[in-house]
Length: 297
Image 1 (cartoon, one colour):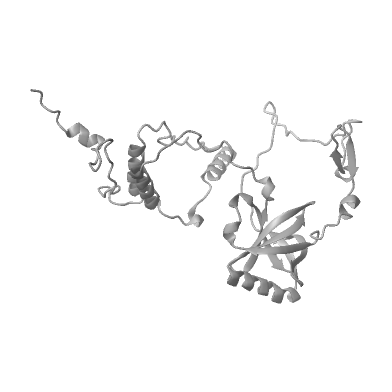
Image 2: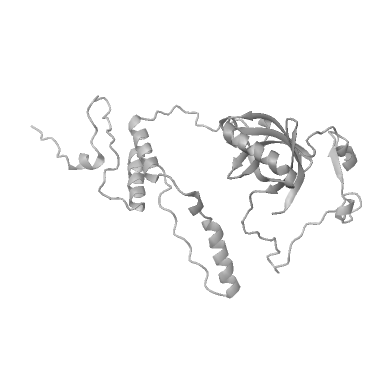
């Protein structure tokens, strides 16, 4: 794997030469913009607003837009002169429990590879120290022109660094949760628990991108002049939930059937209390239909 950054991990007075390697890759299918009338490729050109000329990359620099609308040129020398100790160093500032890191802060992931034989011993030392402490390292580093926050942890025998957003870059969830007062009954929670238990766990390695596969099949069919894949039937459900309990019960049954479990097995040992009648279970809709009406005298 090709490294994208070379530097060192600063671990107190210990310096560990490392290489930074992307730990993830994207498999999304890329499309190009075209002119629908003739199929011509649509391209974006970088043009100077003052003279209208297309500018090559070698003549493009950085500029800061001032409040009045003017542009202040910023050169690479200006940025290189900044007192940034993390320019070539991943500076570990603390060791904290992993639970202290908010998943909302997680960003890109990188493998940290020991650079050369002399780096092997301190690299393994840091790795084993992280393992034994059951903590993660919080670090500061600079990449692509800005200082960033990072979290170092161990995966198998490698040290991985996750880029983290700064705390002030994570928005507060204001206005997201329902603002109306909602009461959830214990019976509803019991059925939700039953559904969670029925769905169970999953091996993440078995999950795959169905949409990407469908796009690949469609592209292959168009390229060969064959018949396009049939449109998938819309998924059942998705309408307005009228009876939450009935929807949960139906979901549990469907989950059991999909896992090949006995359809006659009890959905959940849940007792629904009739409103106003403490200790007496409410009849299910099916039982209510079967029950004969009381005779009138």
